[in-house]
Image (cartoon, rainbow, N blue to C red):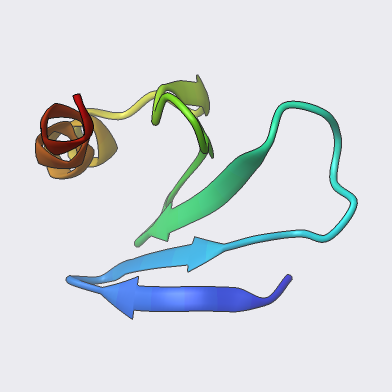
Length: 62
């Protein structure tokens, strides 16, 4: 799984040809989550750490 970027302990990864709904994988310590690329909604692995870190990105895209 290629690593796209790493910041504040968060690692963003993408798979080529992964299952439907375009998404990216996020690893933060022992936590893992999948985010929808278009909406930044958590698809799997809901955790407040991710939601708090990405809330400002969601607001800036609106």
